[in-house]
Length: 316
Length: 316
Image (cartoon, rainbow over all chains, first blue to last red; front, side):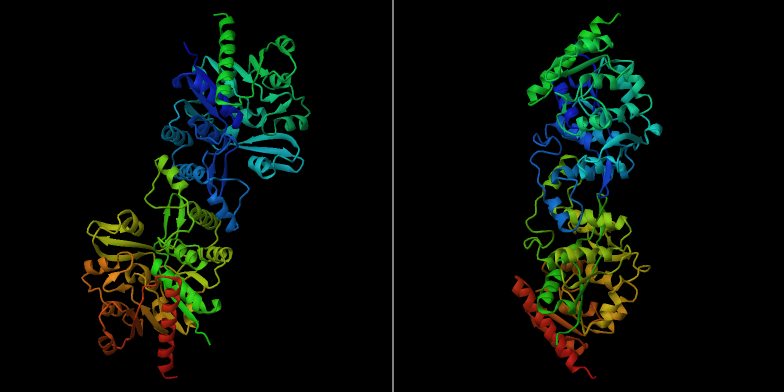
């Protein structure tokens, strides 16, 4: 019997593991809950970078090379908007633009993001359930040496150069979990925290009232986003350094203290199973890089087997 | 000395003659006043079909084959929005989309259409002045056998199939001429009514309070949009039939009664110079088809020479 799984995901790393889980599980057994605190308005369009990366990846239309955006993409819109003096720092491809325009129009009609996402998934043939963490507006604000900066400004425009001091999830306190989010976590045999950035991809999801407690009540395992103390993509290791945190699996486990019971970390990191176990966190060490579709599935199967073993040990 | 010219234009035919006039005149001597009653909102974007056709044509980036949209266009956005279940009946190209998105965002910021148009013309290297007829919302409503239909629905979606009974320029009574519109007409030695549809391209411009009287007070010549009793493009001849009007140069002159003093009509139409002259309208008969850039300029030069001859005759 396949496990019922709820996965928490940010962008590229989260999407890859979600894709692996989708290959390893029947579609009805997988719900992916996605960070939307990266969402922003650009050129009057509502853009959901993490949600789109997850949806495109599950649909098999993601750009494998960049990790974000669509395959077979063209950039004529971007060239023309540059010609008009418009902003080109956020790269919107011609095919990708359809999703942003269609979603923005749907939201303007009053259709909630979760419902638009159902519709988009159906149109693109995505069979697992994909849920935005909330239908409400939550925005990650990055507190830096240069003051507080909106996430996409920090991440894309400033290429995560300003030194980070902390984060604020503006709107989270008043937000409601999206429809289906708490039920999916509560129905899950296993909750998987994908190898996404703990501070800016997973923490926003956990910051929605009720979500952290619900995840903590389940059998939850996290996959460390670090490989040999470095981030595969993005600013996780740089952020850790700026926050005075060692980029190790122990730090990831400490970050998710009280939330996870197991950690999957990379072969390139020193063995710390004993230390983790002493802190009550079970762990496995494996190749977490997911270089191919096969690699995604292999990691997903390891995570599922690890989760199943922890579930089997648990007193009934 | 080149004449100072104000041209009234709709879409493709108007844009072609405006392009010919731009080739024949110094840029400071030409102002093109464009119909905006075809404008509409689509997918949350503010789309100005006639304005864009004029601007793209003057910029030398128009699609020569279709007459509308941009050259070297790609259609990946449209394919992707169809995939999502969105509307594809209004064909938005990838490059073209940049203008709609950039303009929509600018309007949302509170920048008036006339100011956005100045900016777009500068970015695309358009040197004559291009003015939207108004910064206010005016919408052509087509009264048909099936009831009143918004213009783009009638024109594009329904391919002008419903039979026309009349027109209404919703919002025109309360609209103001755009900045520069009345001054450009008043400063013009010659006003040229381009070979655009009289009912749905030129009448909306004349319906803006003050414009008809201002045009009527100048030396104004129209170029008939009919060639051998047929429209070169679009529904003008079909509309004429449905409205019970003969598709002849005489009908065009009658339509512009009190507004024009001269009419340019095509070699393919029967000579009616005598009849027109008896009604006080001077005329010339020439090739009005504008098959090439050279053809546009030749027609523009004929119109300018005709206008100059009428001006020379006029008592001081």
